[in-house]
Image 1 (cartoon, one colour):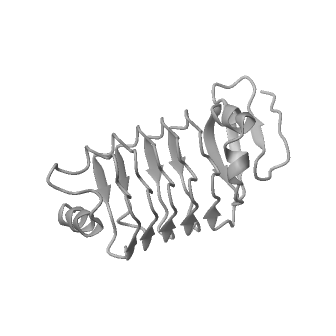
Image 2 (cartoon, helix red, strand yellow):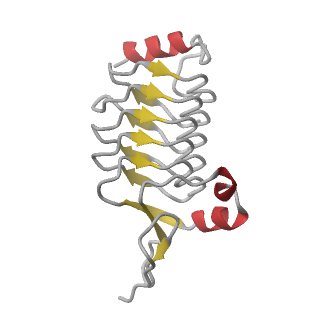
Length: 186
């Protein structure tokens, strides 16, 4: 099988020819600017990404790193990552399965915003201390969310439009009610 490769740095896509895998983004931990993330060219290329490979020895999934990777289904975030940056996986509408490392401490603003196929998130085995604003907002298929005791900071509207996650009597914009409910069902 022949492979075309490019330099292994942030923002480069590697395309595997003759394989049904589409494109792979190799992530080196760098942030991407908002302007670049929303550019038409990047949005188009991200729609072909089916896999993310994280380089060794990085500690952060960069801001906007995988935004708009709409056919990405599974993400395995490796041990050593402590931060998932802002909007890292936003609008990954096919994302169903995420494996989080024990080392994870922070999930940034909008990190999984509009991941509409995401059904279950288990953070219990992590060291997550912070969920950023709108971190899981718009995850309309989300049914199960397990949070660790280490969670200390809870952003606003983390679970807005996650109607399958909470009973109708829980006000999803009342952070205290949301955290209390999530801890009660574990």
